[in-house]
Length: 484
Figure (spheres, rainbow, N blue to C red):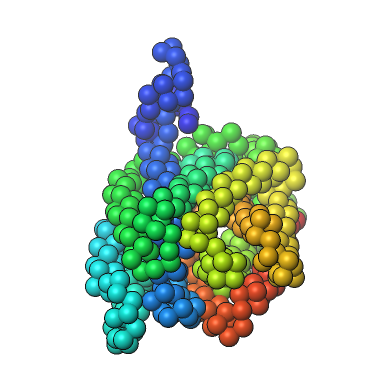
């Protein structure tokens, strides 16, 4: 939290009591930008709700409803991704043109409606599995309706990951975005471990079984929490974001101007200052300097495109397996619901720890891009280990689980670095559109989710893991295009 003395900044801040940071009466009260505080709170509540129902529990419910087939799980996930894909650019465009806060509020209203419709659908389907087995029409209609509901979740999630995070970027100092994105990532990940903890308590109370009645109860609790996340979305305010000059003034260093995503902030400041001095003194740039500037501008424009393409490749691989890892632990390793959820308590905690490690490594001068290459390469290596040491690891879950947790943490811990580079190289008036392009990444996710379901039914989980590891290896090589 910052304690700003600027009047313009204070008018955009939420002021907290001194005891929150153990400060004395003589110390200034801690404060934080209005939109930053709301974004961090939204990450906590949304992370809790999302981790409670949309991962392991939803995948297990759909597989149970689909007579233990993986195909329906992938198909429903594909519909959600397609909805994010087709709504991404319109949502980003309207956020840039009409205002981010208006679109975020509309997204909150959509999430409330979707949660109510989803809960009503679960009630209509019921929990009598024998009756469902004898009523193919109702079962098939259930999946059609689920596809519609998940499409609405895809649009709502796109608002949270698009305009909401664009406004967060607008409200943070330019030279310190990687730190602020680490805060956002940590809030989401820490709350994401609470969802599985709550589900463990519910499963232990209701009975530790993979049946519709227990899974539905956990889903109800998660959907209720989605309403709380939606409520927060009504209070964002575009007027509380930082102006361009405030972004630079509040940062300990200015935004990256050199076209190198690894430049140290101090170095960039010197370059900006030198440029400003030359302009004020009336010194005209030489032809060579103009050519150099043109090359830098072209490189700056390419960096967001490369990051987006790289994310698409990663999503193509991840979509094939992310929904099937819990089912792999359930079926091939033989774990109970509570045991699987313990894994997903450990994963977010490890992600947060490694995101801090990534920030520390990059700040030593190693570079943000080089850090992402290092961590993601280690993560892909862990997945290859799960494939080639399958027989041993499947019979030794105490070794398999740490390998999986480490793999997931390494692959996802680079999010703060990735987002800080993207936001540093995208103009403020285009950030909502670029953040909404994250949802376009869902195109790869949704298509590969359906393919992953088909592959696991035709072959097995390990074969799908191998394909994912190969695709993500290609994604790691994409990062080399950013290395100067």
